[in-house]
Amino acid sequence: MLYLIAIFIGIPIIELYLIIKIGAFIGAFNTILIIFGTGILGAYLAKKEGLQVLRNIEMCLANGELPSYHIIEGFLILIAGFLLLTPGFLTDIFGFLILFPATRFIFIKFVINYLNKKIEKGEVKIFLNF
Image (cartoon, rainbow, N blue to C red; front, top):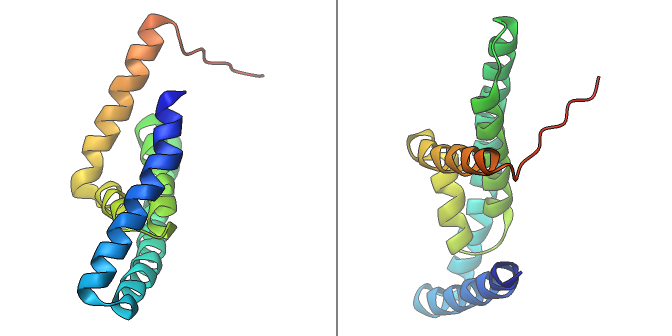
């Protein structure tokens, strides 16, 4: 509960602080252009990377493989897209880090380790409906 409060109150406060400080340094117009530009670039890159992940999922399914890695990858790309569309510099940094394949694997490994620990503890239940 406390971490949710930190996320929903702390991050916007940090973002506002950064926007004000950077805006004072480079000017309000340039700050707005950067925020707008990262949103457009982020949406384009998220779409491009997301379509590649969909192709990878289709190839896995066509080969009879379980595309679990690519599903996690697609979920992270979705999160990256949301972060990049959110106005601010901190969210943009994390969004681009998740979006670029060179650094995305770090986040994928984190999610996989997190889920494995939850499954081992029995805290995650998987339901299959047939």
